Amino acid sequence: MNRQLSVELQPNIVYVYGKVNGKEVPWKLSAPRIWSAVVDKTPDGIYKLEITAYNAAGTQTHYELTTYASPGWTDPKTDWTYKDYYNFWDLNRVENNVIYISELLTLFDEKVDIETYIERSIDTIEFAESLNRIEKNIDILATRYKPSGWQESKLDWQYDDSFSYEDANRLERNLELLYKHYRGNLDSYKYCGMINVGEEAI
Image 1 (spheres, one colour):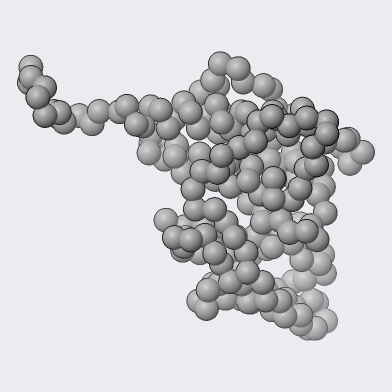
Image 2 (image 1 turned 90 degrees about the horizontal axis):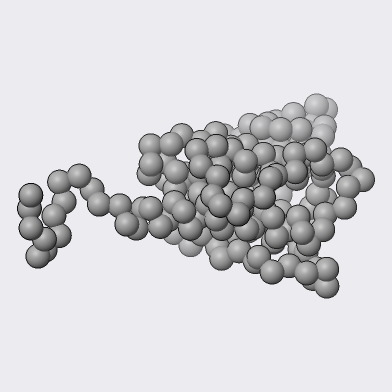
C-alpha cells in the first residue's frame, strides 16, 4: 500500500529531487507551492525526507526532515470548546483520517479521488484553500453514504474567515460517523460461501 507525502515550498521552485527513507522517488507539483511524492507505506509511519529544491535560476536548497504519518485510524477529538487551542497536529489527524477512510472504501469496491494530503509542521501557515480542500475531501468520502447526524461541510472558506471550535467538531464528527459506519459494516460482513463453525448449511 502507498502513501502520498507532500511538502510546501517557495513559489519560485521549478524542480525537486529527493529521497524518502533513502530511496529515490519522483516529486511533482500537485498544487501551487505543494510538491508530492508517492512512497511505500511504512509500518511505523515514519518517513525521512532528503529534498533538493531548484529555482528557475538553478539555485538549490537542501532540506532534511523526518515526518510522521499515522498508518491507521487516529481517534478524533469531538469535544472541542471555545477554551481549546487548535494545533497543526490536529489538522494532520483530520488529514490522516481522511486518507484512512478513503482506503477503507476501497474494500467496498469504491474508488475515491481525494486531493493532496499535506503534512503540517509548526512553521506551516494555513490558507483558506487548504480548509476548502479538506472539507471537499470529507464531502467526497460521503458521496456513497451520509450517516445520520451528518453536518454539511463548509466549502466556501475565505481568507478572513475564523476557524472555530464548531468547525473543528464538524470535521472530526463527520469523519467519525463515516468510520463507524464503514468499519462496522466491514467487521460484520460475511463473505460469500463462508460458514461459521456450528452453523448449519442451508
